[in-house]
Image (cartoon, rainbow, N blue to C red; front, top):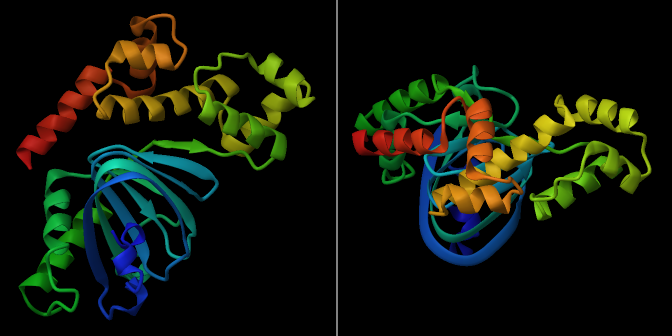
Length: 268
């Protein structure tokens, strides 16, 4: 992906005269953080290996393997990633799929869409629009439009003191302080904090913190950490308490979630 490759700084997707441009990268990095300027073309980022984190559209988005983030046209973002990364980027003219959302959204990628995207990344950038590659692109766009959304974001509040809480939880997700304790720390009444947080994120404090835990858990489990280790890292008293929370939010246990991910990979 060009934002990670120093030798591809000249790559400019808006300058490619095609409705769709796909690129990929397979790299090992000790850590990278990059601010990305907005493009006219919308952007789909698919993670095949490793986990990336992006801050965009008033939220923090953790994209675990086999999921993708849709980034609409004109949206600036900050990209972070580390370790062994295999990532694919798809740049799409806004009018090519007018039904796609105008806000960031995590998408569940079907095996067919995944293979189409990987194939498109191998095509010449100036592919023949009326030839076989052009027809592949049309099928790819149809599959993209049909992709279901997945709730894999951590909404960032607009209010400065609430953002302080968000950053503190990102840095120390095991912090189990109550909303009343956070209110005392930032000098805000508990009821006011609850009301403002719901206004900015649409979630209660407890649900908001659980959302962060789900995202961090997906990241660490995908990297091979055990459920027990992840549960303890997130401040849960036991693995069973963590699994109960995970099932409540995701509708399935961590083991079943990743088993289905591996089944989709095998089918692909």
